[in-house]
Image (cartoon, rainbow, N blue to C red; front, top):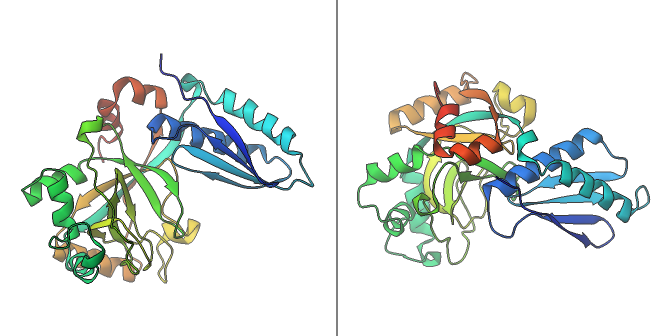
Length: 294
């Protein structure tokens, strides 16, 4: 029987309770974090200020003048217990397509600028990621990376930054890479980075230490345009959503950028119900079923 991990609770000063589901990244831990924090928001418990879901944990900030720490802990334990039965969990999520220009000139330029901070200064970030994952053929690497759907497990760091983790793969199939030895002081907006087994899209220009392998053609935060999806929510990323990369060439990248800048681009999305229990039972086959017709 598929079981969700047991949660350990800790107080953080007088205003926080930290719930650790597992210390390593596990998809089932993220499912539980998503389920608990979603239920917490629905209950609108007086005194709770903020609720943050992370990769394999969650954090609750509260006002101790409105709710006692022990009372809140009792609430959390009760909700955590009800969300530990995978047969009762079902998430309504979106599959979102991300057009990406792999190994683009901007990413290569940033690799060159910050090579003194890199674990292998003679290689570009893209070449380094290929090498550490045993790829010699560029197209083979791109196919492997873009054919894998990724679960958004956490949003944070820079506003709108989405950490996403590969779905449906065995541990030895997951692409992984070391980060920079010392972070870059600058990263291009929409740069796609890899660090460990995680991917991110940097929403704006800023610091970063993930290896840059390409650039998204579409924004992931609201900008000065009329794109409906970003006007409604400011951020494209929602924890629990699935992102799927699609390789594009320079010509298509530029065409999409023009559509974005003129407010004509339509994000390709599909709403699905994601069952942790079915994912545990079928793995990759279940994700392929969800991705049908997308």
